[in-house]
Image (cartoon, rainbow, N blue to C red; front, side):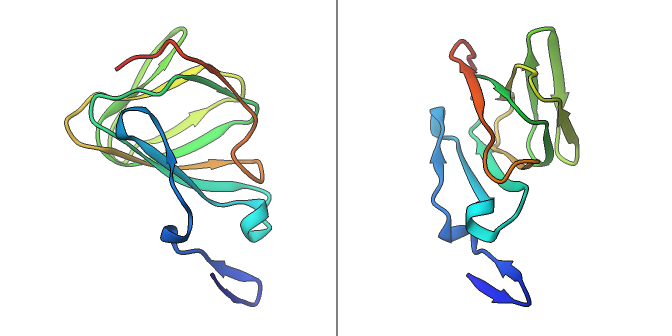
Amino acid sequence: MGRLGGVRVVPVGDVPPIELPGGSWSRVVLTGERVGSATALGFSSFAPHSATAMLSHQTEELAYVVSGPGELRMDDGVAPYGAGDTLYVPAGVWHAVANTGDEPVTMVFVFPHPDYPPTDRREEAGA
C-alpha cells in the first residue's frame, strides 16, 4: 500500500474477495481500518443470471454500474439498470441485486460507514 502526504493507494489485488453465491464476488477496498476513511468504497462482480439475497443496510448505498444489465428487486417493485447508471438505495430498503444478462455486472459502491455497514439478509431471492 502506497502512502504519501496521507494519501493511500490500495492495490485491488491486496484485498481478498468476499465470495457470493453463483460465482459472484465483492471487495470492500477502502475502509476505515485499511485507510482511516469514514466511508467505505468497494466493487462487486455479479455473474450472469445471478441474484443476491434480499439485503437491508443500516446506511444508504450509492453505486455506479460499470458494465452489464440487471435490476434491483425490492419488495414493492423492480428498478432496471445498465452500464453507466448510478443507483441510490436509501437506508433500510430491502433489495436484491440481480444480473439479468449474459455478461458479468460490475458495480462500484460506497457506504457512509467506515466498512460494509450492518446489514440484515433474507434468503428468498433467486436468479
